[in-house]
Image 1 (cartoon, helix red, strand yellow):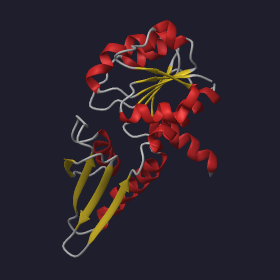
Image 2 (spheres, one colour; image 1 turned 90 degrees about the vertical axis):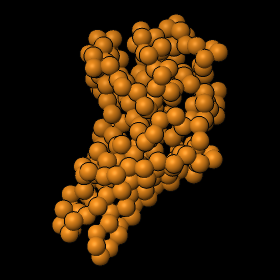
Image 3 (cartoon, one colour; image 1 turned 90 degrees about the horizontal axis):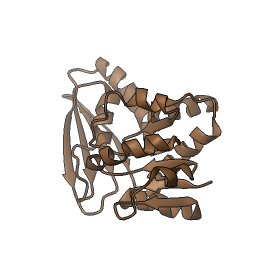
Length: 224
């Protein structure tokens, strides 16, 4: 199996290291081409939002499964139709930590259950490395979506922090905290590679665009 890795920054570099000789890396100095991508089984893409426009068509024409970790980007409205027309399968995620998706299920529970509390206030804070361009992070925005409650979101950029997110639910008489901290970018590499392999191993999945959470939920149900 060969997997194209487009973008070799902090997370992309971790994916290349994780895959070893299975990785076929591409970056701005060695941009992907349709022919080069088509010779691999799937693509994992971690590029900044401002670089996504330049490679979407190339990945589409290659017609291989693609896993996108790009954040801070407004995806074209017609993307699902274009991906289906190409017969491709794309998965988009703001955070490819498998553990983060267990957090998602907890946030959904907190959002529903906190309606029993007296005037709760919600605050989400995220911290990442100083080179991360978008703020708040895509994951912090996802936390608010999963919580399904109005929440204040704050951000900080410090050193080489891999990613830390915390929810604080506060009432007059108590505080509740939920925290997730990434210790190594390998966890994102593991999740992204797991997703690519899941697409390849489950041929029944129809062409189209999927959220990482939907793929995780399908696999999670198989464990029950």
